[in-house]
Image 1: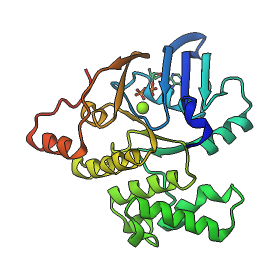
Image 2: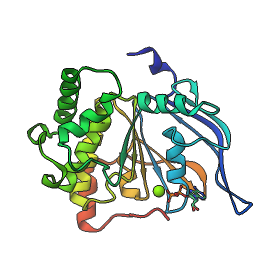
Image 3: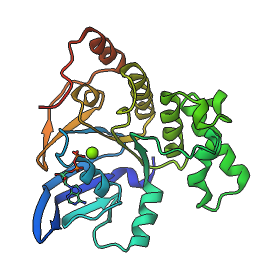
Length: 253
Ligand code: ADP
Ligand code: MG
């Protein structure tokens, strides 16, 4: 276990985010406090427009809060320079987006090597790490395929492998199954469950209550206000069965 394992991965207190447009100030996050430990699988669930992506951008060091403190593995993020933010982001976070963001001309393997290029690794080392990440998501047989030769679910698995290739302490996923049908989406989520069981910390952002139940812990965001939600964890198989028989409560109210 590494030394950082004792400090929370995420420690936010009283984060506020406001935008000023046409001299009007709009506050979209209100005093958000959140702690995530290493090994957690946290879902942040809320309806459209509630502030999920804004919060994800702050968690991912893509944006800074207006007020409050955010420590990422003990390091204060607020007030850092752009260069330092980029460094923290590259070291600590693997991003997964709804739209995969793969480069279509590159193979699965080359896509996974991309984030390693900036790390001064040799070509051989990069290749080994990228291959290992693709094996972990079950795409060992598809390494040399390009985007157009992969299904939607496979493309998202390549994106997950690319996020894993740098061994980030945290995977941060914004609506990762939003573009997939429910069966394929559940397969992708089942894979994330497995990664978490193997120790990977995951923060999953979704508007879908059924998806959130796969996590070990859920917080709800409504109008920029965060609250803890007690829940029973469900497996992806169970969730898939519920989706089939229509007994799901899909959208958070
Ligand atoms: P969600 O991801 O939950 O749909 P967002 O975080 O994208 O919600 O947006 C939350 C609120 O913040 C919305 O009302 C949105 O219009 C507003 N917002 C998001 N980004 C900006 C921005 N750059 N400037 C002004 N308002 C923004
Ligand atoms: Mg969003």
